[in-house]
Structures are given as structure tokens and as C-alpha cells.
Length: 260
Image 1 (cartoon, helix red, strand yellow):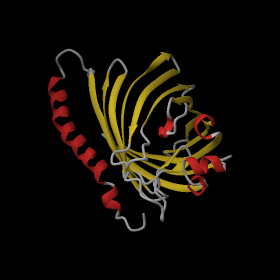
Image 2: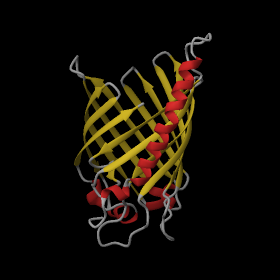
Image 3: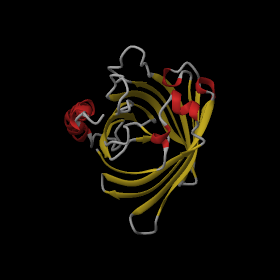
């Protein structure tokens, strides 16, 4: 990683962002011109955004060897709650001195539904296909995951994810989490906390816990976050079969995102 320039790693997400912005402009104009014809709420909405971060940490583990990352997303949402989209992030799974796997970014396609089951209770279900273009032979990490999240009492959520072949390891993976996000008075800041449990007994014979604590701030369409993440019970089997334990140690990261 030390001999690789950051802009080369970020090329794919930047192209996705450019495509998203190019698509958004004519779509927005068309939607604006269509209003006033009887229904002020659009049936379809195109949304997206881009996020820069000092370290991309996913489920407690750095996906970039603790280096910066750039992410981009675009999705199409229907008024009924159904949606579909694409998400991309620069990543780096190869530690210095190891054979490079050829992977420089992750590209996810997803479809889902989000809506209110009853007042104060919302459900979001999404099916994701994660792909790692450019992977060399023997480094097939692609996987499919189904995830459901229940949000309730305004500030809280619980979630469960299942993959039949997580990271191409030949076994099932289960991830459950619970957390919340609360405004800090009228300051404009927010506090976010989450605890997760990753069951990788089937492919790796072990499991671990992850923790997140973050301070958030909204500036219109811009979201900023200072987060601390760490893990526990991240044993030798997972370190050998997934990512080195040092990538799962406690760390601080900063992220700034913009949405349209």
C-alpha cells in the first residue's frame, strides 16, 4: 500500500459519482417541470452522495489498511418504499509485503424496501450483492447478503444480516446489531452508539463483537462524523481467515459526506 497513490485507488468511486451527478441534473429538471399537475409528491426520486473518510471501518475492521477512502452512492426510490441503487468504495485488503489481490474498490448493487409498519416502527429490508472487480484468481470475495433493520421509539434500531457464503469463504455469516442516535439538545450535534456481534462460526470457527461511538453534526446536505470503533473477542482464527487483528483494534476516524 505504501507505494500506491491514493488517487489511483479512488478512481472507480469518482467515476460513479460523476455519472450520478450527470444523471441527477436532467432528472431533477424533469421532476420540477412535472410538478403542479395534480400531485406534489413525486412517485420516483433519484438520490445519491459522496463521502470522504480518514479510514473506512466496517463492522469494526478497517477495509483500507487504516488509510483514507472515498465512497459514492446513487439510488432510485419509489414512493411505495421500494428502492434500488449502486454503492462504491475504495478499499485495500492487502497488507504491506503480501501478494496483492488485485482489488482496489468494492462495488455493491442493492434492492430493498423501507416503510412504516405502524406509528413509531419502521422496517428496512435490503438485498445486497457485493463485488470486488479486478480480483486475481484465488481471491474471490464476492458475496450476497440480506439485511433487515427495525427502527423504533424515534432514536433506536436493531438489525440482522445473513449471508449464505460470506466473503466467498464457503460458509454462512450472521451479523446482528443494536444502537441509537440522539440529538444533543439544541447544539446541532448528535451522539451515535452501536454494538454488533458477527457470527462467523460456519466459515472460520469463531465470532467477535464490535463497538461504535460517534459524534455527528449536520450542515444542511453535509454530514460530519467523528467516530471511535473497536472490537472484542477477535481471535486468531478470524485474524488468519479474514483480516489481521491490528485492523480491528480501537481507532478514531473522521468522515464528511454530502447528499443530493
